[in-house]
Image (tube, rainbow, N blue to C red; front, side, top):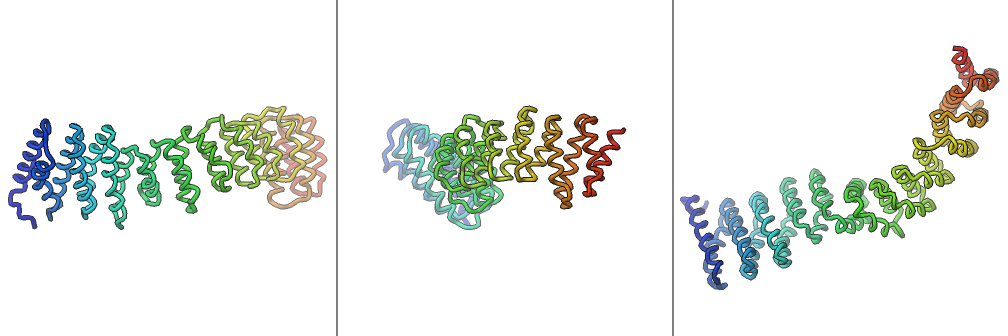
Length: 401
């Protein structure tokens, strides 16, 4: 399609022209001289051959970089304007993708030279490019990596918009996380509006990976936020693992939403904040009390277990089950009578949950002094509760062995 019989010769001659122009940079080059010299260069961008257009962009980006290095910013701007126009008009994504590799260097030079206007110009065409439908995932990755390399907060809204795309999330996350605090505000704003669970999960993941840099802003956004945002922020703070937040989080043990309080308890478990977990044992929610016990399980002392035996008198079979497991692991003899009393409350219940709890309670009693528990087992063998009577007989057999 292109009437260039010797393409390699064409590129060779073009390289000579660029080299000559670079040599002139040591002197003074007027805009008229520049336009006249570049006229043939710009013609490459109008070629019907994608490879010619690609080489044209490559060479002009290299030339613009040379202008910036020599601090000829006016000339650089003229070339950059033509480059960005070519990017906006280019229909072949492969041409743009290959040219982006060179654009990264030009952007870096412009930033180092504190040329904010040039940096903005270099980003402009991508708004139009990304507005096109059906862009390949690999092409989007290229843009994501370029935007990430800029370290310019202005690109964050565009980077966050890529979270909707499937298949490129690891690249998007890798581009966003280094922005640190600058990314936190955008992430929280997007999280606030996010109704899609998958998108919300990605945002939470990003905030967790930003880590300690995000703590201050996360705490600021806790007050007055919607329940799901409070829950997400608290979960993130737990994952970050900085115990300096426990005082702030303790306030949310009084939150009106059970889901938020549960997130606080799970965060305290991660942070190993036992005072907060012990306080949560007075919560009205069975699920929250259960999670608090799970969080305490590894570190709780025998003395603390004794003070928790009161929980058998409250409602919540999952709480009772967790407490039985703790008593068994810690081997707390003071718990023997309360466990027997608890077994009496289960007597004559035939539902599956009650059967499991009876088995657990009998197993706990077997951990204690056999001479003290034997009489209890003998008494239970006469129970009308067939399950309890059977379990007690089995327990007596084990004691005899």
